[in-house]
Image (tube, rainbow, N blue to C red; front, side, top):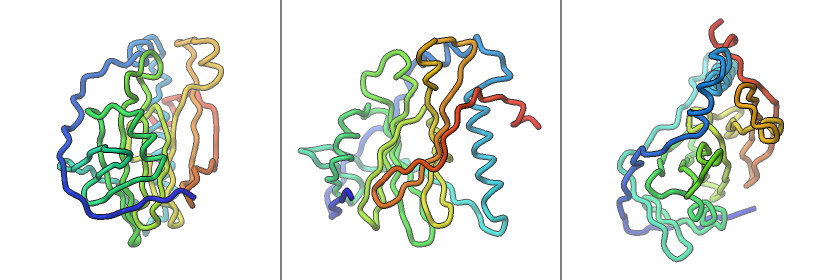
Length: 214
């Protein structure tokens, strides 16, 4: 189990994402039929989650912190009034593009999580489409790191008091063939628990849009 030491520290403001990034996937996917889209996959999965949540229970949504403080210094991350020293946190910070970091908070039943997203530092080609995520369980002092083709924070949600997330990646078939007219994606449902990213479900999808439009 990975641990995080949390303590008070000074605040240093970090500029938000500059929004300047060209995505190879966007350029290539324009060749695809509009019947298929990663966005359709994302919307479908979010709708499934909302449908499966008990109707009497509101689905919590992460909210973005527009004015936050973040600094990396000597194997420590200073976030708001916390000091984070978990090795996964440090590794994540070394791989990220500091100017593209966004910080969110997700809370439920007295549990609180920081969710950080960023582009991968100096990424090129297909990797430039990846968003890298860092999830910090404040109360249990645990950290989780994941990557996804989606930068949609609404893919993080609570179910049965556990934090879950859905990620998207290129399928092995696409990586091997690079057929942009016949793309497929790996859709993975993770359960973030006890410091582990446990796979709850994994499927391959061409992301048809018909299911969204019905």
